[in-house]
Image 1: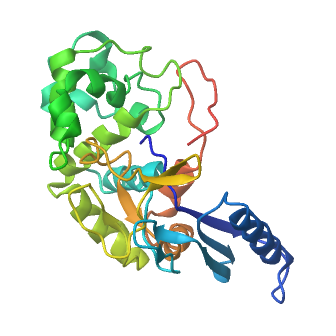
Image 2: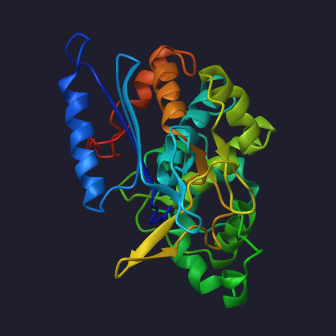
Length: 303
């Protein structure tokens, strides 16, 4: 998701020396205090070692309009940090035998069965690893949807509308699936729709029962634009030192590539659940952390 969000959240996880006054946590605190004083950083910082919180700090405001301050449990729009949750949901469905890495997109979402050429070669593994060649839906949407739809304060485009747009436009792929790498919001939006198709649940319901609940995450929700989320940080930017609202746009009804909301405490819980096998079993968690490869054997930097 394209997002220019302030405030920010930062979660730092590391393994280090035995407990006591921790120099790494102290260093982070000093650095971020200075960044806040300089007007650069406004957000929450959590530093943990071996699952133990060493530092949890809030600096700045959650909503410039009323001066509401950030607190340790403030919820932020995760933007593209939502993608690991989408990927985890897909891997859980593979682990349960409801999908495979080689499952074709067109076989899962029948809207794509009439798509031309190499569209028929797109598989789950390509969507997960950003190797599908799919064009960016946000760039297509700006030309496709009417200006009135983009500027309406009460209408937000959703996943089904993006899928209908792709079927209508039939855009060419940037490259044959599996032959190159290009970061893809479109791929992760489609993965969320695949989760719904394969599980028979809404995307959020599947995440809640299979990821959030096992991890003990109580503050993480799908935060598409029409929902009011308690204790959420409101996005804003600055122009010549004057703040302005930069919080939602017409594409904020979509999910999978973004639009989860969470806080640093819940993100730490997800990390610990992942490490301790409470979400995925060891085989699939290790696979998720293994670099993907292109068809020619080129190893990518990401799983």
